[in-house]
Length: 387
Image (cartoon, rainbow, N blue to C red; front, side):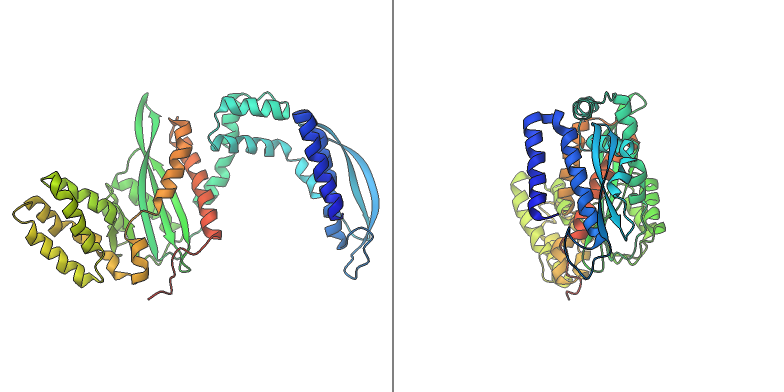
């Protein structure tokens, strides 16, 4: 098929839909199916119609009419025939799976945050179907197999590991409770990001973190040389049990926020913030430790609780100095998760309140799998060859 024929087919489809709306959908799909089958025949033959080519594998042999039933109505198709090469349009093979494809489309709309009532209205107008809310909910279950496969895919070496937790509201036992959503992000030896896993539970206690980290290792996660996270409840013990000896960096952003709890006067907060940033921006660990000790002495009398905090907690934010200088700014906090949390909030805000843990996990997994695909096919996040 020539580019002109392809353009004419596209124009015909647009005109049909513009003039007839949803009523023209069946005829539009009929045109698209027929043109797609012509393109597939050209690919199978290795040549365009009437083209003389040394790579040609066979010849076109007309068309065979076939009436094909669909949710849009009956489609009158022209099945391309060939001579000298075996060919059958894959578009017709997909037609046999139209029931499953439609349900997956409905499930995808559910994941995108469209309420079941709205989905039912859309599918009824578009496809002539009367889809109930219960059918939509059941259709969403079809996503579970695909999402389970993503959550349990094999892992490999990830030198850097970022851990975080967020919360969603769910119904449980007749009450509304907070549900912990645990996330793990890894940086590959090639410097790309990947969301390694997600787990949903009513508790962020050690047992949840421990089982989550154990599952990552069982899937093949190894080679972790550095971990960054906030000081989440239960994480410390779980991390020490599953990644013993791996340096841990406490998120400097959250660490600085935590410090303000020990500042006795509001007027002192700006100065304390500036002092902490000077420690974090030091050229090396030795200088950072020197400045930290100066701060301990500086605030010993004016803010004794802060001085104690500087002595005990601040060192947890200095492990990043063990990394190459080019990596430190991006790996000293969990700020890369801001985009993830923003997208999750946008999607989950539509649901408002999840009926159970399973529905929370389904939606969160769908969003995270999309982000992972973008990351893995996108730009490098860190130059792992940097000194």
